[in-house]
Image 1: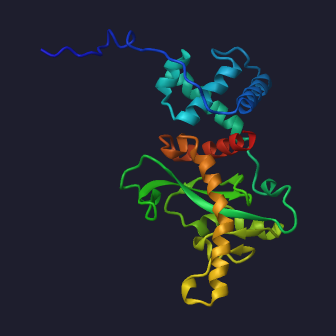
Image 2 (image 1 turned 135 degrees about the vertical axis):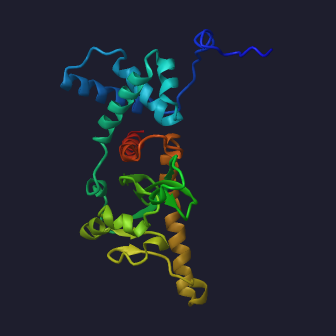
Image 3 (image 1 turned 90 degrees about the vertical axis):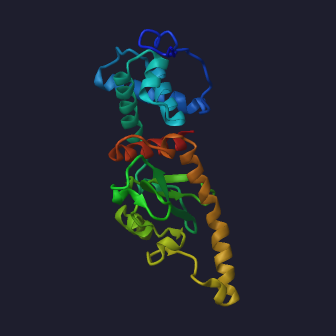
Length: 265
């Protein structure tokens, strides 16, 4: 006879709490807490199960470690529904602080350039959800366009679109092409953006069959675009975008939240 280790009667008794460090800057944690404090003051909802600092910690743990709401609730002594509500509220507060597309170019001077590229945020979907399937990455996900400084510092994350959206199509839909043309900002992008025109510069096709100066242009172009991977690294350092289990409509809010966190941290 096999006796199960976990039964309804012993499930709670086997829950063992533990402490673990969270690798986020204290400055970011403090800023999130103060934004929540201002939000509560404006809505006159100061009496809560968790204080502002604990609610900020709850949300940052969810974003950094991609913990489920049931685990978060157990760790902070609240219900699963309350954990979801607190995280959802904090995401909305932080997303409102994310800079807009035109504000992202503030501080760029004449002769500066930016890097534009796209990344895929994997999601849980089945094969029938064709719009979310990226043939390039061979998985379901959401397409996010990223604008970064020459050193790779993220300036702006777009809202998320279905994974099969082409990079150039997404850039036009988000207004990136027109905004860069209006600001007269030089853009370095990969071959996926060929045909964007305006101020976009992309590598040449079949450059090895072209004269030497074409090959040199592609080498220089690749070298200047390489730091753009740092923006993706900052985004993916938060585990939630690595495997999002939420609604596809919620991913845009999460991405804008992570932009605020990246700029603040």
